Image 1 (cartoon, rainbow, N blue to C red):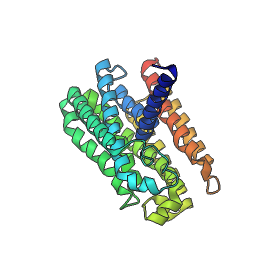
Image 2 (image 1 turned 135 degrees about the vertical axis):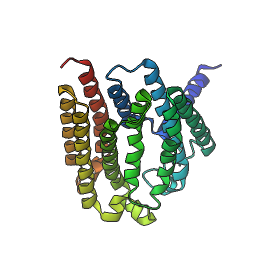
Image 3 (image 1 turned 180 degrees about the vertical axis):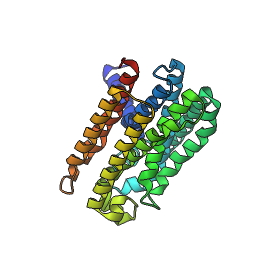
Image 4 (image 1 turned 120 degrees about the horizontal axis):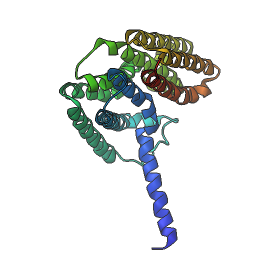
Length: 297
């Protein structure tokens, strides 16, 4: 085969993979996965089995693949109209709905298999967790509380990681889940500011669309204050050590920085606040909690 055709074929394959990754927003995995690991690491006292880590990872991959694929299918009519999203791989037609449906089914199968391999309670809760994810994309058509539903979906990550280790519900995990809920709701409110004009024109519900820019910024900040308080409650309840509290101080500092980045006159900084800062928050919090369990106090 001529080298030119090989190169074209390679570029086509790479482009195809890139389009699928963009459709599934793989980079956003950094938001939830560290909190799933945080839940299982703390629940295990810092010494989870590699088998548990592996199956939790696969469960997260499966659940997120299903949730994002279904999200893209449900949001397709809106994404085709929205100037910000119309060039994404799905609304632009580079990734088709049948492929998304196959990925959603495969992701669900992987999720249930992983849950079954972990323990009976994980398997019993798996349909409910999946239902939360599948319902979320439709909520923006009915209620501005959709941001908190997204927070609830991401809050399943630390709860799932915890139960993967213990096989039972334990109240010590609740503050961590609440922290993730308020953290995710807060940054999703900021992200919704990007589509404020479009949402108003097409009757898409969000806190910015319902209350305006300044109240949305205040509510986002208040959610992040509640997130920091909840994370502190978690550290107190689990008798965390110095490294945990240093990590929480860093997280609080990054949350403050996130809200200094964004103002009514600087909405162009939302992408930096949404992805870069929040990606560092999840990773930093996990790493410092990990050190707290591994490094003698």
